[in-house]
Image 1 (tube, one colour):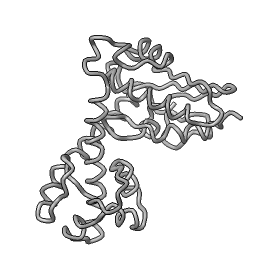
Image 2 (tube, rainbow, N blue to C red):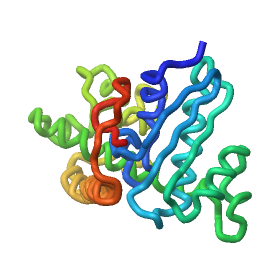
Image 3 (cartoon, rainbow, N blue to C red):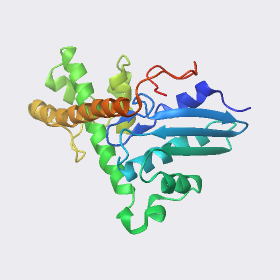
Length: 236
């Protein structure tokens, strides 16, 4: 059985813009979804014609992988539209090629280093949101920094907690829950300084995300899709 459109949208939602660490669905990048038999087609567009090709390639790769993981999907067609490198990106994704194979010398080190850099930034941005949430619950620095991964996972669930644990990706329950960019535990005495530093990462991503929404709306307008299975906030 082919997936429903609701299942397709749900599969796309965790795919993030690597720079912003925000869902491509929530940002309004996904323009159109269609299903024909075991083939799913997705068209997406970005805020400007000159958005970074490597970021676009990462999003396209991740969308393709997410949809191929759905039961009943044998083929995925990802189409980037209104972009200077759309033809090369679309052909490369269709053929399952990596970024370097498509862009050659322009690709420099490929996407692995870019992915790792933004993975680390995403971790710190999500960490800032969670620490802020715990401080709003009147948790002190010692209580926060002494938390283990297992203890954090056992707390009453929240979106900030879920997103942070997902980015932390640590299986050892006795490992410290909060570490710095080098993987070292954060000392209670240094928590506020650490928080001030990492909040800049989060605030920058949030500001850039809002700018992307503004640019996307200025480029295409803001109209709702006629598809009732599309999530709130998806643009068409």
